[in-house]
Image 1: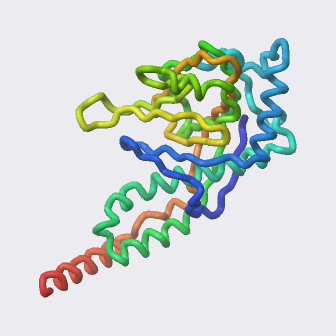
Image 2: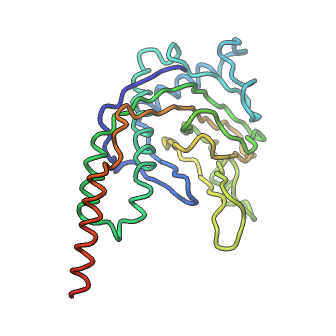
Length: 267
């Protein structure tokens, strides 16, 4: 699916959660019931076909072993393409904000009022274009899996539309490491006090955005029924590149810090 969309104003959205378990940010949000209904209709339609055409089939390009993997195109989405794009735009905006804010948010305890003001002013200048390079649906049954792999592009994502009816019971009865049908994000190496894997229990309606280079995998499940998810690869560009602090603003920050240090020393 090739689509490019403008996001002229980027704002924080409290409905989206930033997860940063080991360095790279993962963004979790929720699809609207309307979008879920549209996408489930596509899954029913494509899943009912005896065979996909070469233009529809996406299985040969992917690392996983799934019952069916089909391309989600603008033609397939039809009049609902903009609804899909709007959801992608929201998540892409939030992961871009997480990228911009990661340094200064980690320093909020020492950020000065001027620093916070300048950051806020710069965030208002962000004007994104979000390009959907490709999107596809995954229909998985018992035994299907995805080995650890990465995606192309800058940002990737996955959304969940359906889970096997008895998978909750499967999670509860696993006696060692409940993981059936879950997605695992991998970064770094196992070590004492270090998190190198983040496991997500899929919830219908949830959608995740993450760096395309971040390795991830999906464990097989044994329950009857199908697991429906869709994935996508994005490019994100800020049309207004002037979001960095100017030399004058940096000088103002240094002066403010010097003033605050003197006030602190005189207390």
